[in-house]
Every structure is written in structure tokens, then in C-alpha cells.
Image: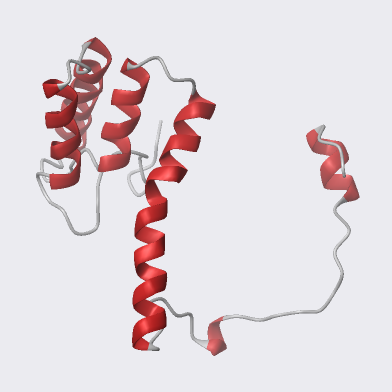
Length: 136
């Protein structure tokens, strides 16, 4: 069981309440192209149950959750879904970079007093062994 303060992937957004227009556009496209189906309906039912149980009617299905439901409906594997999600974020990343370069003002900053840097060389050999991955 999740604690009251823990985030649930695919649900909620800091700016959108009750409806995420990006998720709604994805749903509309899925319905128009015949992709909407049982898996998507199930995800919406999970969302309805969650907001009812948590008493948070303002919590939306966000675009990531909607995309996950639609891609699951299309029989993509979790690994393929992750790749497609990453690819779908690239236009936004490129737009942010372009804005920052044109305006000479960084959009996202972390104040220097909130970070620390080190030149220490890290040895990740034990982590690689534990994970079962091989070092190249």
C-alpha cells in the first residue's frame, strides 16, 4: 500500500487539475484511429478508483499515463514503451535548449549553494557485479 504522500506514476500533474489537455488529445487520437480499447478503459477505471479512494477528484491522468495505456493497448513491450516515451520528449528538450541559447538565460537552474562537486574518481565495479551487467 502506498503512503499518502507518495506519487503514483501516470497520475497527477503540478499544473493541471481535473483534465490534462495533452492526455485528452492522446485519447482523442487513439479513439479516432481505432487504437482505444479495453486496456485504455481499464486504466481509466483504475484512475477513477484511485481518485475516489484518495478523495482527490482533481488528480488527472497525465500524458505519460495515457501514453502508457495506449501503448499497452497496442501491445508494445515495457522496454519499447520506455524508448517511445523518451523519443517523445525530445522535441520539448530541443525547444528548451533553443530558448535557452537564444535568450542567454538558463531556464532551469540549481543555485550553487545547493550543489557540491567533486573530482573524486568513482569505482563502479562492485555495482556492475551486483547488477549482473558487464563493464565495457
